[in-house]
Structures are given as structure tokens and as C-alpha cells.
Image 1 (cartoon, one colour):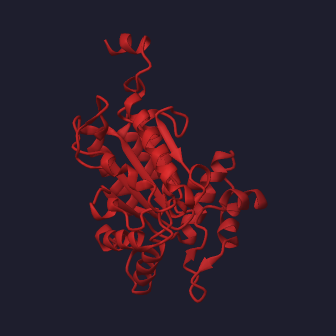
Image 2 (cartoon, rainbow, N blue to C red):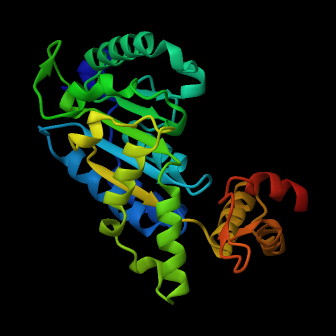
Image 3 (cartoon, rainbow, N blue to C red):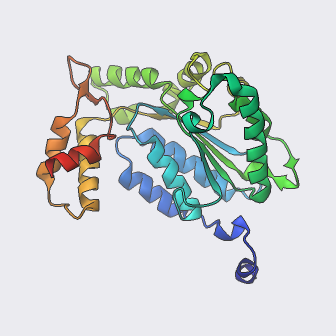
Length: 292
């Protein structure tokens, strides 16, 4: 019956084909050095998708330095729910510098965002909304979504509790990097760092940072974020794995020498110990071009 319905309908339910095993495998295989993100995202998405009548939307807030895998994870979620990373009409991405560039137009942005989100939820209850670079979002804009993120009811005949919201930000990286460095200096394995050591500190950081889109936001005080997802700074071995993946995508899997050269060409911090890549894996494609 569904195939007959979908042959004559453009309902998003016809494109909604979650591949849970595929998401779990993708996170395990292609996300490097991020055990907390792997576990949190996998568990949160699986539990949400399997619940046919969730009491609230899934709201994930991804935090960490540039190049640590936040955008990669958001694209994985889209790809394994709708079969495409950003090409689906039901996956919507906002970039503050493009969509909300002026801090003196907050009132207009709030109105635009509210109507835009509601219109897309009416068209598809299972919409995915991705807000990138939240550190560049004018404070006050995102609060217009507060009623959409809690355990409320029906909006325009649509159960909008089935939507997924993903916020991406570098705010909180100082807290995350400090814990990672202290763990390293204490001889503690990075995989022993637990989310509960970071989640409250990240929430405080985004709430109190004037450059955060969540600055003094009720979304934080009302605890409407389902999970804060910390992304740790990457070690050289993680950078080299990123380089190896890039090489394999170009049909050059055998060039381990290039992966090693890329790892050696990165800048590492802190200055006295050189543990963590200052740009994560962000510059890997350019460095591969240089050494290949």
C-alpha cells in the first residue's frame, strides 16, 4: 500500500528510510577520535527514530574546535535518514553569515525563521533543521524556536515532535580542550573521558558567551537541548586517518607516505607539548593536494 501511495504522492514519509545500522557503522568507521560523539549520536538518533510517538523533537547541540567532525556527523545523520546528506528537500541548513548576517535585524530574522520552520514542518513533520556556526548567530534569533523544541502538541495539524534540530558551534571548545589536555597530562586515556564531565560546562559556556547564539537563551535554561555532544581535539594519528580516507577516496589508498607527511605538516598545540591539531582535519584535503 505504501508503494502505491508513494507513486502518487510527494510525502516525506516516502523518502523517510532510516538506515540505523548504516549510521552506526558510518560513525564507527569514519568519525575519528570522537568516542563520545559516536555513542551519544548513535543512541539518541536510534531511540528517537524507533519511537513512533516521541514526546518532543530530537535536539542535538554539537560542540568542539574546527575540523573535529561536527559537520561530518550532521551530514551522516541526514544521509542515513533520507538517503542524501544535504540534497533532500526535507533537510534544511542555516548559516548565520548567510541567513542572519546583521545583528540589528533580530526581530525580522525571528519572524522569518518562525514562519520558515513552521511552513516546512507543515510540509514534513520529520524535517531536519541544521544550524551551523551558532557562534555567529545574533543572540535572540534562535529563541523564537523555543515553543517548537519542548513537549508540546500539534502545530497546523502537524506533530512537530518528530523533527530533528542540530546546532553546531565552536563555543565550548575551551572547556572541552582543557579537559582533554588535563586527561592527557595525567596519563588518562581519552576514551575514558565521559560526557557527564563536560555537558554542564558546555551549557554554561554557550549560555554566558556573548558571541553565542544561545547567549542567555531560554532554550538553555528550559533544558530543551536533548544532548550536548562534545568533540575532542584531534591527535596526529587521527589527522593521518583523515588523510588516509581522503587518499582512498582518490584511489590512492597505498600512499601511506602521503598520510604521514600530512600529519607532520599540521600545526599542533599547546606549544610545549604539541598534542592536538590546531585545525583538526579541516586542512587535510589541501595538504593531500600538496603532497600527492
